[in-house]
Length: 171
Image 1 (cartoon, rainbow, N blue to C red):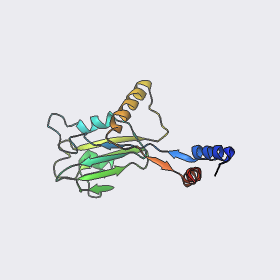
Image 2: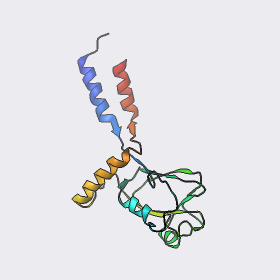
Image 3: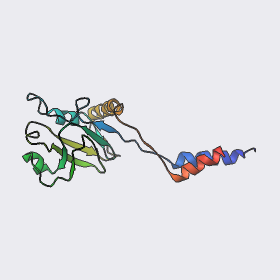
Image 4: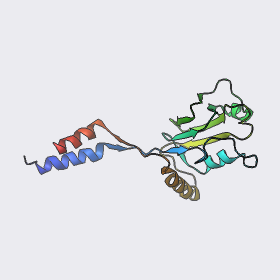
């Protein structure tokens, strides 16, 4: 059955306008080492790692660890390395924390003494449309997101209307 060229172009236009592209990345905390107690001479390792990356709302961080835990806490709890009521707690060994909003997030290890030895991290998350403040930060941001994307995933979201439009082309 021959298709009307106008229907084809209308459907194609519908698909391109209804297809939503959402890029989100999953960052591996500590890269290949994971979430471990850092060496005594490198207690800033996680904060240095976090400051080298650019996190946006809808990104995630994955914590991989053994016989440990991860907690998201307040700034005061972070400073004290102690929390009796964390906002988030996991001890599964393979934890994914999703940034559903922009802002500052504080993470500490829940294992006794680990936070005091440097197993803690501050992550600053930008809004999806927020740009870094300077051109040098912009260059670093692009490089960091490209480099870390190999450890993460890029997600595409199709709206129901776009799926219907795509199906009508195939039928």
